[in-house]
Length: 133
Image (cartoon, rainbow, N blue to C red):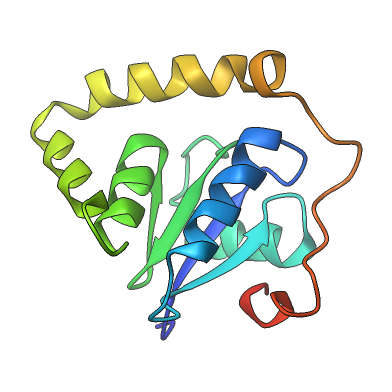
């Protein structure tokens, strides 16, 4: 079992990269590690944790306690571990997953059009390199 939670993200998505930077700035307890879904380690972790028959995720993935979470569940579980008022967002878990995931999927489907796309995955600065797998 990992000693920290792992966030896998779409490395070429501007929204996803901004979200990673957002979490990095709010992770004083050093709870998270990051990897792009497109990276070798990202692909290995997906293969290791993705249940058989599940669709390969294309945006955010949280691996925590040996389990893989995707879409709105991943985002809300991440928010729950951030300091300040962010854990209050976890209250949205009361809504059925199909509703939460429909909203999440709508944003994810349009993320490149609304926020743009990079040609290559984000390269962490030397100061942040220890947070990336």
